[in-house]
Length: 133
Length: 298
Image (cartoon, rainbow over all chains, first blue to last red; front, side, top):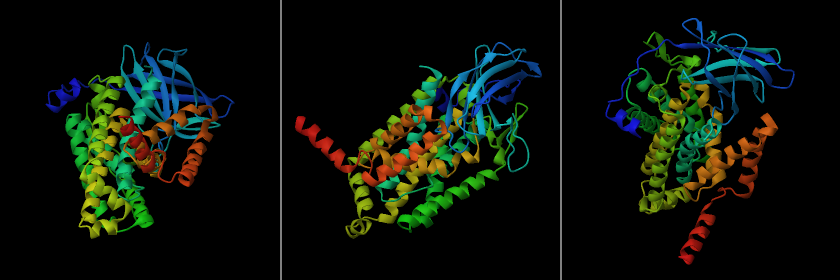
């Protein structure tokens, strides 16, 4: 409520712009329907971002609050900035993958990927370009 | 509370605004398949104001509600002349037009080296007012439920007032209400505006919870669900739509073992309820029965 009141009075400070965190997702079909073993690569300014607590959720864009998966905690991967998690998506198609970073770095990123039995690729929209990450 | 529970409760809260918006029109006798459009209008308006112009969220939420009400009036002026199925189809068409407008809406500004703002089908990233001010998910949940409680209180007060009785009389028989001197068209337009503002409030809260929105978030599925929540929960009281959201999201979360098939459960539930309880679980009869029992005991 304090935040709201400050905001209402226009006193809320505008945070300084920090260099944006970039994320990439690479998943392999596990062999079980709609289950994928995924690696998330986090970087800031081209430098791998290690030591972050990462939780991964996903929503279907056409039914964002109802058709989703339970968020899973990612484990640090083999390389710095890599995080591994298994996603059970319930069905193939496009998913908005939500990355919530906590710990030393706090952020929230949303990535759009197409999942099928071959694996995963960035979702392509009608305008013909891949979404920015 | 863990992240998952906070997430589920947040979704229940956000859906409740939309469900109450559909409910408001239903008790006035109109079935709208288009409330998701006003949810989207609120999300985009609020997002643009906070992310591009740095407007504080409370002011952006008020502006979003005003824009939701305005668009609802613009949609309502031609469509509220229609009745029943024709009105439902017209609202669906209007909502699809709004979604397509979101798909061609490009309004980006460079902020901190990043392009921020609606980018058509690519969506609208960087709605981070809440996130950047360090509001924790649990705090945001409290804000959502605080607003929902206020809205619910307003509903309960209206339902006990002369306006509430007039509204239900219009819903039950508009011709009879008109013969008693009620300006039915004006009342319905007011209801449409209030329902639009309410959906827009849900939208602006959703956009700031998610930090990202896109046109597909506001498609027909969302409209069907909002209507279904009101119909499942019941039209006897404003608690009905909230019960509908709880039942549906509770079922969806409780049946994850069935994976994607659980959506069939939702469809089946709506169908069965519409057959056996056309005015929902908490319909007028049940509400009267509960009130009678409560007063007799008192």
